[in-house]
Amino acid sequence: MKEIKKWPIGLFVLDLLGAIMAAIGIMGFVDDGGTDELLLIIVGLCLMLPLILHILKLLPSADSREEKDKLDGEH
Image (cartoon, rainbow, N blue to C red; front, side):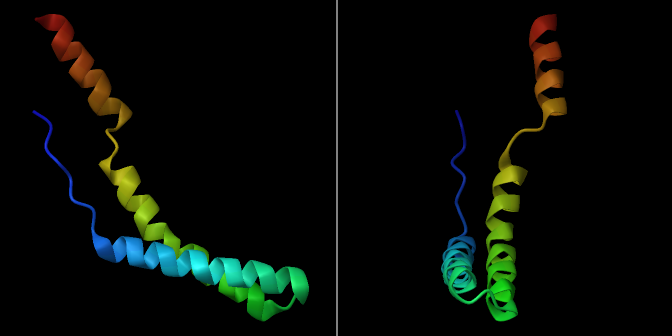
């Protein structure tokens, strides 16, 4: 049976905060084109990165799938 993974709420909060900051930065950058808005975009994207890395860590790697296929084929 598959085990249920729990998602850390802190990562979702960081992702939401990062998305809001990036959106404000993009709107301001389109309007003014200043460096402050560019900084907001970069910081917002960096805040969104931990959730993406967590999701990638949960995905099975290609090596583990190949090993599993080899083991299944031997039986």
